[in-house]
Length: 402
Image (tube, rainbow, N blue to C red; front, side, top):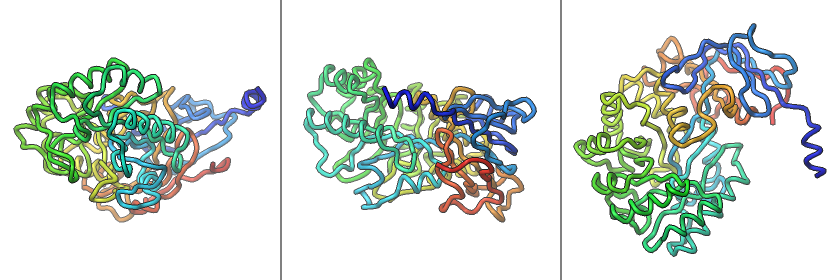
């Protein structure tokens, strides 16, 4: 009760972001907003528009964007976390913090598969999933929101197992195919049980990623009917073009393109989605940590690559890494609109880029510079140590960093 009373007496934290040069909403249908000011109270967006029309009174924190672009925090739809900010796959500390410096504010686990001694028995895999879900719910490395606790299904699981997982707070399945279930009929039954109990599913697509995994082709992918077609461009080895097209045309599920995959297959998937007028299905991930390492700028690199080589307007490419993923994953971030989480990344053209503007530079294939990252209305990173230096950077002119 004392804690509740203390929380009730705390003054609201009001963040005002002013002098925004370009507001990228994350929404395909409306990627650029006519606004130069955003207001957030207690980590939620409460207003956006022109400065003269927005209530800025009582701000506890003010950020001067200095003419830079404001975009939703980037979302990595495919990561493999283990314990906090450490990955045994590369024996590396700080990989999540490095991704924060690449503008990523939210990550989705596709399975804690690199956990040493990962249990394959049903009791053990459920315990690992629940533990991972709890760990990352209680601890945000560098402030990044990691949605974890994604069990890889094994033969012998029953509907009751999925009900137990859901009641314990698990909302994700790890990549179907990374566990012992690799056939379509069994996967389809278990995916249906998961969906019934509110657990979202992803499937491994393509050739084996590491020793012990295997090929998952179009027939298994389509029969399993997972919510997301994980790394449709391969993780790392892609399926033939005919199979990729068959998957795109044969279902209406999310089409996940990852950095640690086949770039030509990524561009092919993008082209098919645009031909089908279903760009909203395309979401982005890194599939890291992996054998190829950790790519802190993986999402930004995907945005620039798809824009430059896929002839996709930069403002739309950014939507694939934000709003598309938020909608597919049912998240309250990824879009700049009233009521959403105040997760932002400030971007500007890299110094000496050939592009005249931020969007021009991305269309030319350059990475943007990250000037600041905000999560739940709090500054978590200022000028990035990983991106090329931005031409302009925002500044905190009132208040203190968290």
